[in-house]
Image 1: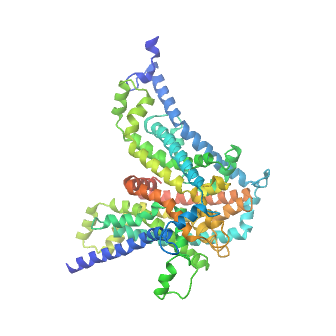
Image 2: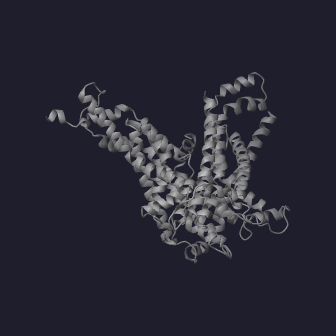
Length: 314
Length: 268
């Protein structure tokens, strides 16, 4: 009796043998695995799958913050097209995404090319470019709020000394252009080094022999860049661009903190509208509908990226 | 030869100028936080902690609580999960892994509205525990992926010899495998800390009362709640208070830092 019921965990690990004992051992081990995975399953189920279904359910209801919900589909969705602020927020978010992605990609790629080879100072440069990533994004937004302010910021003074501006420019709230530029500057500073690092891993994965072969064939530096570097970097570039567009479409902190969405709602992003619908207008149903629409757009963006990556690897 | 010298000069000058531009804001915020009307001192820090809508010690304690809960919870769940995914076969394994990774595809903002309602139902509204649970969930794709890879990298023989010595799976995990996955644990813990310490949007939605605010929320509140003038110098002091722990960690753990960021991005 004791020999049969000895817990399998006490027996030496051996390849699973056919027969009853082997079968129970395998089953026991699979049960143990499921047990270890249970906390993950519980967390993912309760705080991801359920909310995901709930947000869709909420979007079909009139769901005031403090009163019972009533079914009203598809009002929340039709209201999206009628709400003026949403319209302008979509336009602004798309414009911001385009500007941000182009500039950030250009800068990050430039930095990556600058520091790709091992030479003097390269470690210091990489650290300097990456260091802003160590500061939280909300803190970085507050940092730039002070940096660009008239009261304690040095920016206006420097520009005046250089003769580039007369008097004071209120960067974060003066006009929609300066407000947008402030946010763009902040994001460039904070995220360029991070994207540089990802692009760097892509650059360094290209075998040096390919470059040498191209050089022997008499290719110019520009030709090597166009015909060797860019094509081989495609998966990394696709990844970086996806991260950038996704991040920009979800912009919140930089505008909430730096520009307050102003002046005159001109820098109000889509996620700010979601927040406003939910916690200022207290209409959770409407916020949920915008969320679902945004989610759908992002899933499409992600699928396109996966497609690009897969085409590359096949 | 001459072009070589010129090129290396161009590289040094460009790199140096850019490095100054990138480092300047950080150095400036430290300088601005110490500058007072008459010279240098800690006046701005004093105002940060004493002015009407400034931060209070309990905000810092809240931040530490949320960070501790998030780091502890993330390590616990992702270690057990990573062990399960790296070493066992069980029904639903692939599905669970894919669903966990799908968290990455679904942005914060879109499910936080639902999480706000859900936590209300669970009696966890305006609660640091509720916030920590949400932060743990958002950390899971990265952490689970990291820990699964760490467990998969351990040679099977190590585990088998432990079992020959009479270890159960639990004692094998705690005595033999945990020391072997330490680098993974450090990276996972580091990122759980950085996220929970710096996170702004999730606490903004999930915490309502100023008593429960984390430091980030309280410092941002100094800016958003002020209708008149903003105390910029105290704000920069707040930025420094927030940034210093992260910069210290960066200085000591640069390797885990960079590895985490890169594998975090490349898993996508």
